[in-house]
Image 1 (cartoon, rainbow, N blue to C red):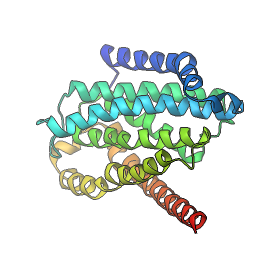
Image 2: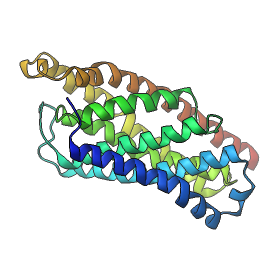
Image 3: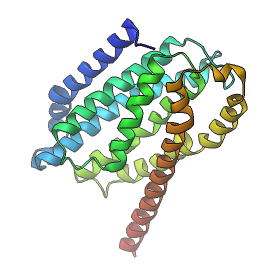
Length: 252
């Protein structure tokens, strides 16, 4: 299957918008908000810039996904094919953003914000997003992927606050607690429900007609992403416990 004209337009517009935001908006906004930004080395500024860009993207896409989750009556676990224009738009915005962020990564390979797991995440999201954008198949499971974005504003704010010297602030602590809770709700808690519903339709005749690319997404990339999420949750949760214990020791 090939990408439709409107899907190509959405992705291209998203890519152009986030490249514009990265190049002309985020650095100016951060300079106006914090004097500490100017003192950061270039590699760290790239990390902070991309984190603010990611915060904007994830807030937009996460809000669209949450709206569909709460109010859509056509997206259910048993639906194999269903055109959902708002979901397609959210997926295309996601792909355009990932393309922009990957471009920044390629141009700045030493930026502090990236590691091997983030690179794997981007590759998976590019394939998954494109497969979903050209297909109206498995909308419930597409939505589960986009709902993962609800966690990212908290994660990106955490990185920005840390790099700007706010690691001891109350905002950093409150955001960290919210981050752990939202990661669990958006990326860990849905895992058993995802597989409970998916296994119930895998043997159906309708599922046998699903395109190969979406089968790869559902049966290969989804478990890979779920394992990454469990790995990240372990790191985030233990990091919060370490931060809280260190803060408690300083008070004693």
